[in-house]
Length: 174
Image (cartoon, rainbow, N blue to C red; front, side, top):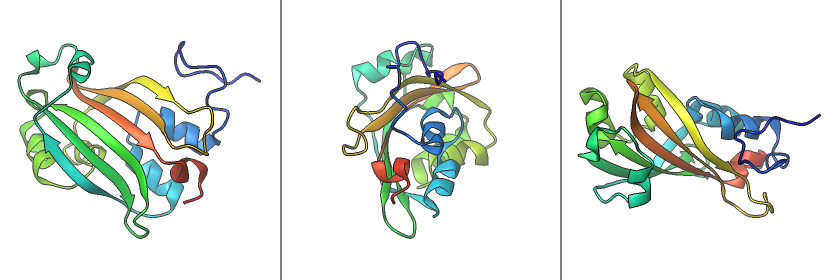
């Protein structure tokens, strides 16, 4: 049986090295944090959260229709096991501030909560468009399974998120 690939440019069999739960995590168009919590068996918190007004040209190019990119913020963080301190995900995000409701913007800039939890807290309807998803040929011996996607709010590309998953969270050997 041939498994469907995520995108036409995804290498055939690139996800064969992952179990079912890890494939679901990598390809979900929903919020990662609750799924990750179930996979690793502990609550997830953020660590090393930072914001920066410098955004790379490649990130800007990946954000069409985003209100002229007037106010962009780059956000980096780690998703960490609250009990173990294990780093499961490194995440980079670009936020188009003017495309987000004001209460959500305030929380994104002032709290430590993961983006998905804040979208849910503020009941923001969104659509996720997966752009890339990759698993290295030598996974799990090498870190670096990753995915990149846009989150649309009200039809506008409001967030660009890139996540780098540790082998611990994708293999269940946390």
